[in-house]
Length: 87
Image (tube, rainbow, N blue to C red; front, side):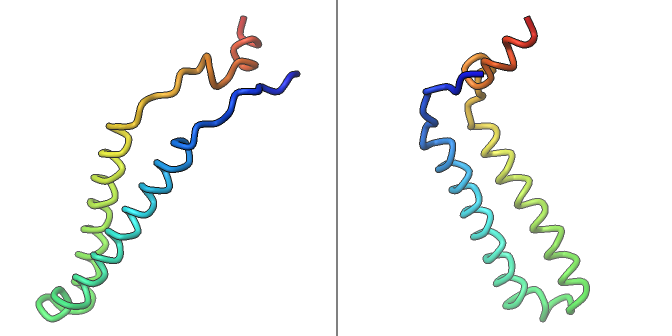
């Protein structure tokens, strides 16, 4: 079994890291909104439930945007040894 000499593109690390940073920023902004505006209006427990629902929706939207714009990886270039085993 020979190792491939192809290098891994930096985008394979940078894009997921950027996604993580965006999700962390969304979570922090959600927490700030919870502490500054939501608790006074709806109370502690309902505010927590609403905060959780809002964060889940925000994460789904950010993840869908990420995966909708991320190019797919061709199996041929990434898994040559797996392909060889199928033939």
